[in-house]
Length: 494
Ligand code: CS2
Image 1 (cartoon, rainbow, N blue to C red):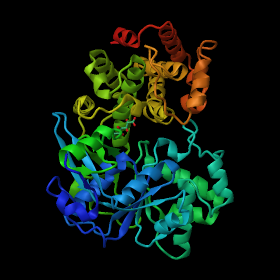
Image 2 (tube, rainbow, N blue to C red):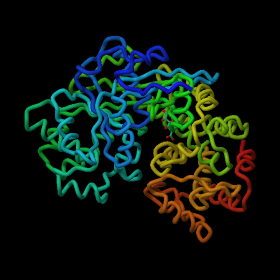
Image 3 (cartoon, rainbow, N blue to C red):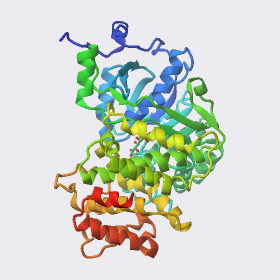
Image 4 (cartoon, rainbow, N blue to C red):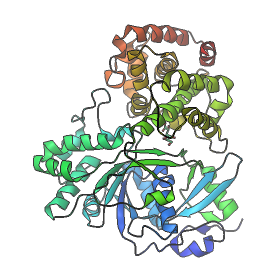
């Protein structure tokens, strides 16, 4: 094998014979977007949209500076620096075709853990017009049941006492917005791109809750000047595997230490309310609508919830990928039943969307065998995801006396998953969850009290007190704990 070419600006011309590369000038453009939480998803989604615009000769004032606020971001920061912030996006088609291309829209990166002042300065820079976020469902720091800001978080306590030493997104945003206000600069837009219903409204509510305690006047200025568009984002982006890095080196002669893989599908629906301008994203297919609510709800309650249904049930059954789950007829039928009987009825009509077609397309996307999206990625941080993707559907169906059984079995399986931490064949599960210990502790009391897992009110609300729910939950739980196979329980229900 020829030595692969290092992915770097100076090698772009040479790499251009292997795959499409940026044809725009990356050195003299302004940084108009600061993005917090650069993971695979941001690189496959927003950064890709921007890259497409720049390839068209547009948006030269909208370079992206990535920001990492967690130690764990150090690795990507180091790799991106080495690669002049270039990376390869490998779009994987269901027929096995891979379309790689080099993305150049990220032009800088700063770490809040080691260089907080540089991060604040970047956010407070006059060129910064949008601060976008993919800080994950858990990053918003609110109690899922009460919807209130969690002031007990020790990092939040720290930054409230030491505003000059921020740790979380809230400390950094208020420090930067204060600096902008004091120097007469306009505010930036805060654009949430996380899988949370009304994500922009949520970001606003949480930031204002924090800012009010820190500085009442600043909170007032933020509430008047900062716009928080809601947005619905979509592109399945699995965790990069070593095999992807090897494929790039072997088949395309490119040495990229952290490429991103994704499906061909991409969607972004945004409310057109920006404080300080925006790139002409509509030119590359972004939809601007007055109210994102119905689109967000559809995506979260069908796609994301669908993922969780397959993920949690699949994990304890022993499936390791999402495509393996939908290839299994029992799982596919079960998912369809959940979507049709429990998730669709609460959505109502959505302008321009045929929900039957949308659900069909989910099956095609989940079945992409080339993506190999892992069940463990889907199950990771379930304590932040299920209260947004699945549990509200149960509450809404309980209120209207709709069906709840398909979603309930997922909670039962989640209890088993958290208790045993193995699948039903005794294989250890890879559990990644900020609440892993609490979940395990609560679930392990199930033997003594069948409702023990549900007593975590911050996750489940008052489900433990709802007899219509607990009746179904308890009988399913007993079946599963008798070691009946999950697919047999599922089969009986469809
Ligand atoms: C997934 C999402 O994390 C999850 O559980 O459902 O990451 C999903 O792949 C994306 O939201 C797709 O847009």
